[in-house]
Amino acid sequence: MLDLFDSVQPTSFKSKLQSAVQRLAACNIFIGTSSWKYSGWPGQIYDEQRYHYRGKFAETRFERDCLVEYAEVFKTVCVDAAYYQFSSENTSADWSRRCPLTFSSPSK
Image (tube, rainbow, N blue to C red; front, side):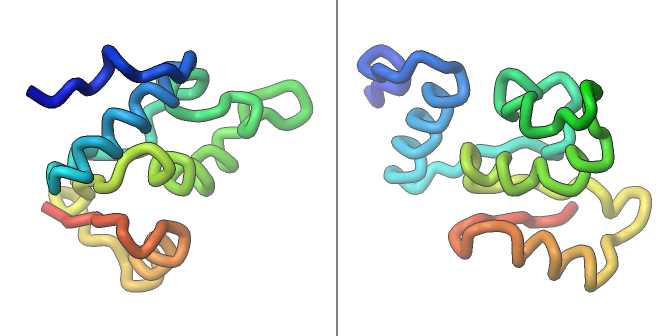
């Protein structure tokens, strides 16, 4: 059985999750979520201080930059935007530019 967390030494939740996701990816098992813009994740997946500006949480900075930080942890995300409207070609190209080549982002 694959040991995901027990032998992991990093102390932060993000580090533990990164290590577990990397171990799964080494077995060709890729996990992600249906979005990367969860406002409850700063301080867990996202470095909360990265999105603070003038003493407040900068929502526009978070919207713009959190995908890059998400891709540091997860290797894939399912873009669940097609229900409302498919992303524009420019938006999809921007997402691709910001993420590693090994990052996968299927749409549904």
